[in-house]
Amino acid sequence: QVQLVESGGGLVQAGGSLRLSCAASGIIFDIYAMGWYRQGPGKQRELVATIQTDGSTNYKDSVKGRFTISRDNAKNTVYLQMNSLKPEDTAVYYCNAERTFPRRTYWGQGTQVTVSS
Image (cartoon, rainbow, N blue to C red; front, side):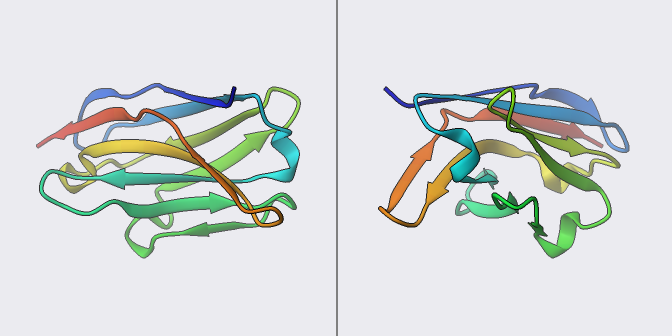
């Protein structure tokens, strides 16, 4: 059974930092691209950051320079370090695991991040 379990969300003041973690089980972690998505109130889910199996990364423009995605294949865990948080970063953050051949996509249950002004 595949599980992606997020942790590290919470309430923080604007300008503060949080570190999200996503622990994966039931998959061969190092062959999956990993990502963080978010869904704010009344908004669609959007991509925040991805990290490929070779370590290459991609970020949503509005988080570049503030967020850093990383992975530890030995711990089957992906992280999202979020600095200089803004109220518009408030959302439920979801962990995603994806492989191409065969096509497989898995989601975590989400963790709430709330940034107060």
